[in-house]
Image (tube, rainbow, N blue to C red; front, side):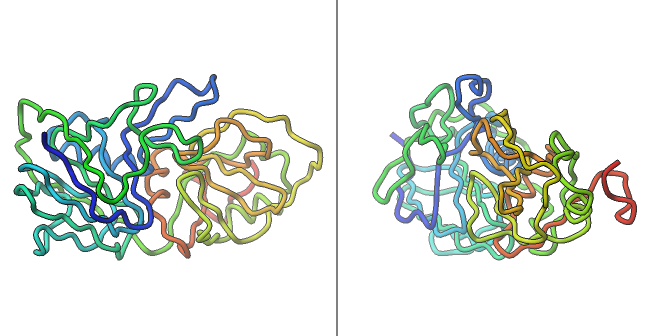
Length: 295
């Protein structure tokens, strides 16, 4: 049986696919890859269906050994990758001979790397998905040293393209587009102006559940309690501290703090690659910064 033996996991490595949508009414979040575009890309390079399970490594440190001859690819964060001790490129097809080691080092740009294998990781699915949800604990356990992750059957056809031109994640300021609401009316005009006109820093106390941000406090115009309501990936929830939290892949399905705005779907993957210390700004599409504020 072919597989990937885990020699080192780094700070956090999980198995991820595109998640388990459709279970929110039962209190089960979608989960899935934090950077879905990078997961889709690694699978397209290998000829796998886009939702095939791969490894998501946060801040590198992942070392794997091939059990059998394998075809792999690495996408996402920019950093050193070696195959058998030799430098290897990102976003391209790599061949691992039986016993060869693949190492994903600490990235210099971006946060999360995706290691895919032709045939996909054939771990047991939970509710139709092989994603590990770090908030609920659903899904396969986190890979541990000495684990051998089984690899599924390779697809019948191999893609013609074996490398992809990709715009790498940036370590500079990050601009995220938002739509205000659904609870922007709970906040003062000054709070909305601060959200749309000042920079926030990504806190080191961030994870797959949410990105904690530090910056101008968002003051409320209403002080009453909000009954718990559904929340989505990309929601900017504001707890009593006034410091917003941007929900990511493993967010809870409900929340009791008001959501001032929601990051647009196309920008969530870029947010998932933001490193601690990155400055983040929010803007409404098509509205110049000097005109931003509550409509």
